[in-house]
Length: 147
Image 1 (cartoon, rainbow, N blue to C red):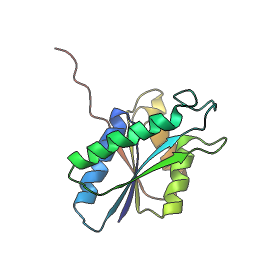
Image 2 (spheres, rainbow, N blue to C red):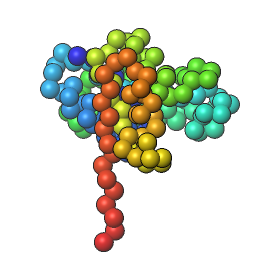
Image 3 (cartoon, one colour):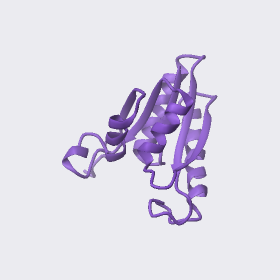
Image 4 (cartoon, one colour):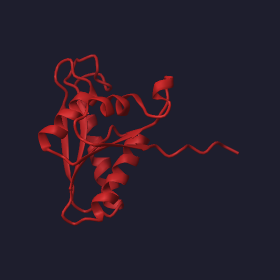
């Protein structure tokens, strides 16, 4: 089984990496691919504001490598994907999933913002609609409120 997990370094992304790592750990023949999307410098979609987008994405993958190791998965492939002009993150993830012919796409969700995104976050929701591969959405663990 080929599993593609997309992460952005958030709590939800880390939860998705843990989930996918545990699935992959049960089958020694499975292939785990951890992916993060970054934008070319100067694009408006770049969350880090330009030239440091790739460095930020590399840090995200470094943390994902630590998460996969703690989850019992020793082998994984880590991919940086640069979004094309006009692309959004879900489209870049879906395109990579098709290109790699994965069996499952795993993505995390904080589940907030608008009513339609309350249960499933914006990126995850869009990915569910456009992906031609099965998508599993992993919710971020709930934060504990101070007592």
